[in-house]
Figure 1 (cartoon, rainbow, N blue to C red):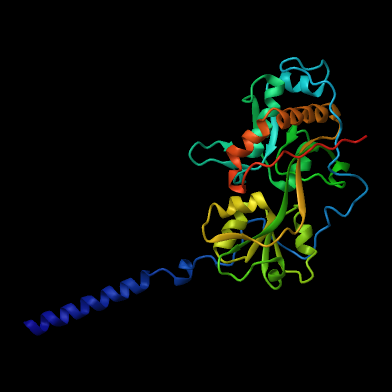
Figure 2: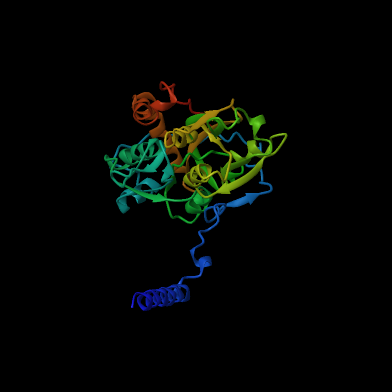
Length: 323
């Protein structure tokens, strides 16, 4: 009896094993995507058209402001009057650049130094900084957003260049900085010379790619759509470094204690407000706003609120005007 029972158990186990084998999923279906897969839109760049090679103008010189109108009293027929009639200022911004323009996970709102600058422009049109409509855009789309009238202005760590001035206008400079490197602590990357043979991330269409491609021993360069993609790729070991402006690098480093900003200045940089080419009155108005915040303490207040990680507030950049 016991022998027959043992034989029955063996037979049942064999049937169960065969059943499991027949219905087991193909192991290939369980394979995860390769770890080397880069985010959508990422490109390996063999070259870039230098953004700053055109030296036919002074890219930082803008149109001198005239008499600044009072809030809620924009000149009839002006660009500002049309914005006031619509009821809001449409602003192209980033939403992935910590410190300057990022979506606060606690509130869901986009905030940062650039956003506060845009709010001051809205304040001088409407008497309120809240009449503003933020349009998150990728850096490569900033010029098109202005040309296609999707936004009134772009406040997005936007560097004036002579090439860009062929399509749009810029305000005076409201922030100056320089370009450096972000690397993992202990990686052995301490300067631009250490980037030889490494993989470096930058933003598609950014002026800061110029300095990377100008290195004597050029690294492999990956262009991304936004800086968070660069951060994610670095954390996954897909790239070795990021090179761009200091505020962006400090913003990325603040999100990961394993990262550090290294090296000396690779290139200077400066930010202006992008404006539609034909809207010269709007350029003058924005320059009037920037003049106000330079002199009434607003610029320093915004800096201390948003950028104290960069150190004590410097003097705001002095404006340069076309004579």
